Image (cartoon, rainbow, N blue to C red; front, side):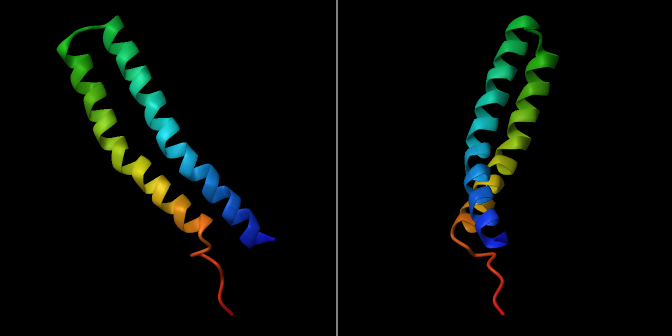
Length: 74
């Protein structure tokens, strides 16, 4: 039961990585268009750059969960 849950949550995490990046970039472009000053551009650039490894980590974690790498061996 728990292994099956981990497997399906892995699929959700793999989807969350790219979808959250798309949402973050969309929000950043919208906010930069509303306030086109240098401070806003720098702020959103930092947000996006910091979040890229987090999104990649979500995808990797999801891949391992989908492939049952976290399966308990007894």
